[in-house]
Length: 254
Image (cartoon, rainbow, N blue to C red; front, top):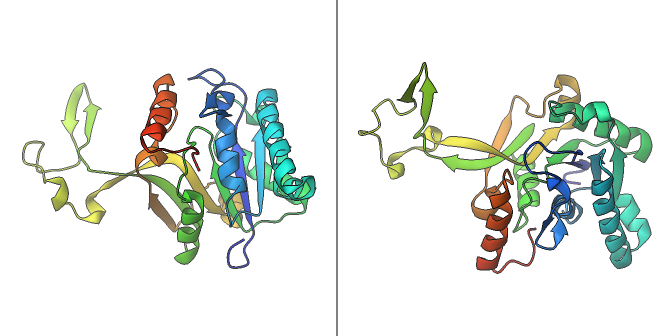
């Protein structure tokens, strides 16, 4: 909760993967991948309830193992109050299913089954497992402080963008041309490109339900850097995160 607003955090982890087989429960630094997002949510000082939405038995096992771990530390009552499972219908777990209908389903289930009518919705994806140094709470605090209705995390990049248009590669953003472009240090904030990295989304619940979109009319972008910005899209990314964690002497990804 923040400023008397209740926060529901949803971890989305469907069965199947078109890229890396079984990636949501593949092990990363000693844990199934999905557990890192659950941990970030559970240990947030702002999140009231964490729900995991999935149709996958292996994700459910990873969820149950973590719930048992929490129960041994904090007791079963507190664990059950803060961590819930939502069985996702298979029709909401297709390759082309967008996140919004799944989020809305989880919100509606939380209201009906858990007596939680949240004000703010957080959405976390297992494929962005790194949220070190309290990243989630920093995002929630940023969202809250400016009267925003949504938040997107991502990476700040220079606008040195090439696009393949009508059979030709074109340098499309900096109109000075690729060999007469500004130096990075000459760019003003509004001239940078900000890439949505899929790590953290925060949305006003009423806007999500009304518009069926997780991004409102007054969003804020939260810049992430380094290991927090890595998405697992290919096999190499598992090794990249583990090796970066060794260099940074990290024992945890939250």
